Image (cartoon, rainbow, N blue to C red; front, side, top):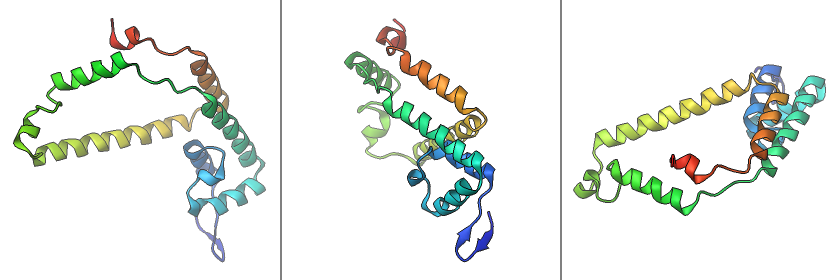
Length: 154
């Protein structure tokens, strides 16, 4: 992105496509610093306008999808599994009353790995077409929901 005039930033189509994949078709959800340039590109490039309309459709599908809640049995199984792994209230770190530096570094590593996974996922989905994304959402929305026995392996 470079300067185009007094306070106006220009945006490439590739950047526009990336932001559409990340934030959807509603420019109000985009970072404030990017919105003006995005509006200008949308108005100047018909491909950008089409991309926003397709993203709006995907946003509507995602908003309409049901959000199943985990059952009580699944919640209890997760808690029991965490306790079995030493992550419960009686764990060694909690008995000491403090979390050591190694535990903090381990947590930072997990957070960095999670962030890297999100970045990789966003980049991977940017290569998918809107049709493929919409088909996947429609398929997942048509599923009745995961049965606890499927999740718990029983």
